[in-house]
Length: 382
Image (cartoon, rainbow, N blue to C red; front, side, top):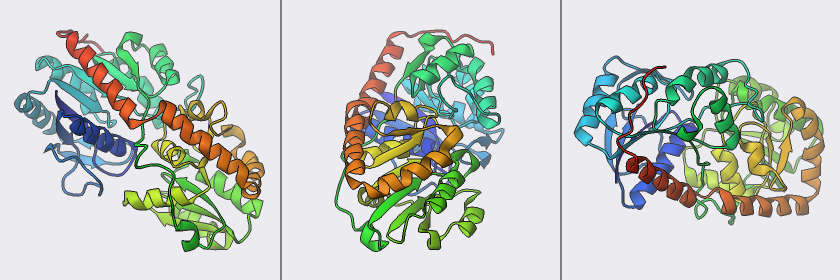
């Protein structure tokens, strides 16, 4: 199958990881992939697919959204006309191009699939104000013009359906993780940081990630000299938070780590993974930690609560993150048998529901179904 993949190669975010892992896996399955992306030479390091690439010109891009140039539409159209793919898959980048892509593909008679990553607050889809709320309201009418829209959970499906996207257009295919790469293993990370117990946060250091609530709870819990908290990631709040929460409190700031092997080494040597976010989609960082056998604590936002429910981890209420962590952090520090048991359950949950292999199989089945339904006229409107 010839697949034109439209996504991001930088800056690092869940969308970037998703594009890299899925395109590599599709190539491994014998498909032909062309990767159209908003990047020049500065893409994030990593195991990027060896395939045809097309750079789409842009004015600005961030981890949240992308602004293409006026030429981008023509470059995209001409490239798709030349590639002649069987199907187009857009890992949506919160870009104006997302809204014209259905018209482009209709003109070229190409089936079009999208993955909609945008995070949301939690059960009942109680969106917070800001980017997430606007994105769902803005995108819903246009998503109905795609042949299929992939989301990560039933909760997200119900939200988009309430906003007007026809349910038959929506496919639930959760994120998946490479369970061979991300697995329990031997690590020297505790010795490196002189720690007997090691807790980890990995993600952006931004308001929606609620990292300060974790840091305040950590400092108030007085975890002791032999217990450390590793903060892996970068973002706008890092400089200010790093000033108040440092090594004297057992907090170690590692910044963004591009080397995947190093990130895996950290996970394999840690005991507990914490994700205190206010909004999420389905966190790949959480799935990676679970696959490595860490005990996981995460807020009930996006699909993360669904991932951990029924004993695979501890689900935290967003309204009481700090107070709950003040209770849980010492408990997890003092009871290694508890973290070991939860780590085993976390790994088992990933093996049952969230493997990359299953994700790709379901994606292939979706592609086949969409192609079998051709030609399907895309409804104009929006």
